[in-house]
Image 1: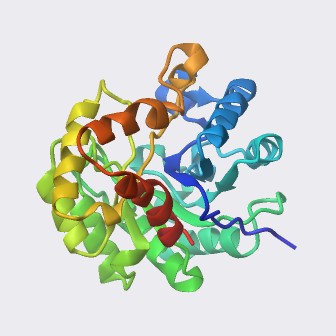
Image 2 (image 1 turned 45 degrees about the vertical axis):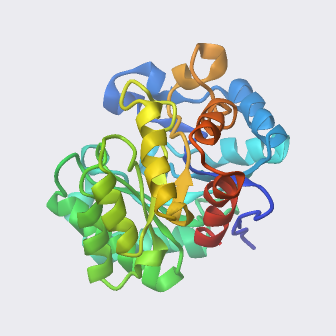
Length: 296
């Protein structure tokens, strides 16, 4: 019997994270092998103490997913982790993607949802992170979005995407809905890496969810501008379609290694939201209620 992890609606959720990821070979950078168990374990314990109960772990097989590592973290800390199946983006595809048809790619995702990931005894709960390149969706990426749509039709599991620096989100939504996936089953990732409030409004108007999920990555886009966009969404009553996360992927992102660490969202970013007039009710929406509704 295999386990399908489900969300704990009583606590907060980080909606787009990695607890083990290895893109070091692709990026020729050892910092991109995120594997420091003790440090990650200790940071998960910090999150539990701050009311975080769930991590949506969007690393798939071709990003270096390590289910045994995750299972150990869950056992040692009590954090609840939902695992993912799918493919990332063109630059990181394994060679067989170009030769595989849509049905074969979908079948792989469906198998991990229905029967489990390898011999782990744990099933994938999310179709993620299905990605596109910056400024374009390549033919193979379009094929992957089609495969994700087929996997949704078979399993009903939600789809979480990766956008290249906040580009192509509207096109992702259009592709998935054209293949019959309802917008309410789609969350568009990385909507907070540029000033693109108009795009975010159009995504929400189209029925999708959006993620501000690179919080703390100020070298890409400053948190002050993330706060300003969330403030604008608050003024329009739209934070009921937003989820938050940090997308931590590198050793150097951890606290002990000089980075912001997973607790930054709770300890630093949430106080910034409160100072901007965003209510505790809205914070609870983004961190608890919206993920509980979407990832149920």
